[in-house]
Image (cartoon, rainbow, N blue to C red; front, side, top):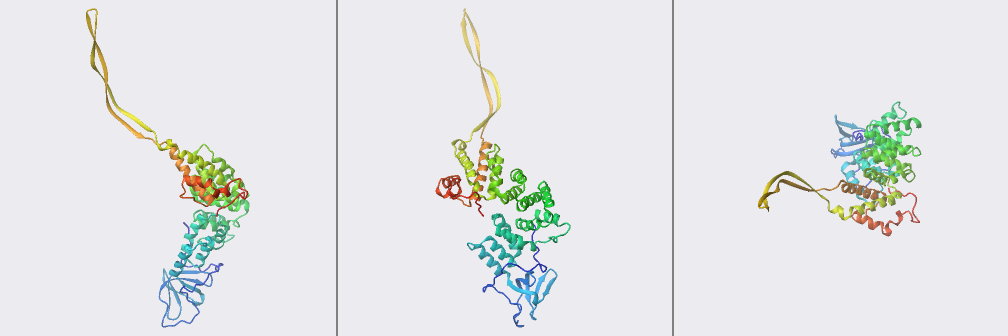
Length: 418
């Protein structure tokens, strides 16, 4: 994963988001009078500079009122005039934990606060999880595009000769959050035709990261282009990550309009195609697909609950030898004479092996059913009961699912669950 350099960021511009002050935090005002008798001891702090830079690590204040930060080469002086604010690292981490537990806090606001606090390592880890959990939260995308890129190491200058190639490489080996930040830079890195050709080239790459990033960028930047390439990758690409990115790209293109082939694929003769089509539709998080997913899921529920699937057949094999022997003689008397008629029998020696055979079809139904249940949870944003097939069936037959039915008067053509 490509993450940011956390040691020293003095060249970045000022932070654009609001950064509140808290009475409970140990904040040091740099221009306040400092007593030489009680200098600040060495503790882990986060210093924010007037230029938007961040210094994180062990720091202290000297007897002369000068801040020092401990870097690899030792203690380094930081001009007091350049320090805008100082926070104890432990206090900020406690505040972050409290905000994570707070109900109703928007993902974009949480990520923006974490970046503004200078908790860059935590912000990138948190951002990766949030982007994966809320891939269609447009406010979260705006924070990623507007504020994350300046903390990504190795970004080329705008207008550089090799800007497009470097951005494609960084996006392909970065995390979900980094990919979101790099997509915004791609829009101005090259003319539209050249950029589209480069993304199509990456879709044919052997590198999973290249295909994944290209799929995401295609949906973001070329929403009116032919969606067939993304439709194919959303089902037939061998990588789970690429299939997910392709589905997200289709969602940006307008999933209700372009994903008709995926809905038809739910009735394919191939279980693999049906399973992957369900996963792709679930990744779009578009509630317009709840009804076709449920139609197929009800068939799977019925197959999974049939009596035959609970009593798998048994198979047997005999390994041994068979020997013939004379067991007895039958005496026949005719015309004053007797004839001994031998009775032949056989002796069997060996072993009979028996085993229960669970058919491949039964295992396939179980895997396919899990895929459909997961897709329903993503497209509805709900998990009725314990998420068992019986719970979903009861939910679908109740009034709670009315807004997801095609004949619902208030149903929109496309509803999106964030």
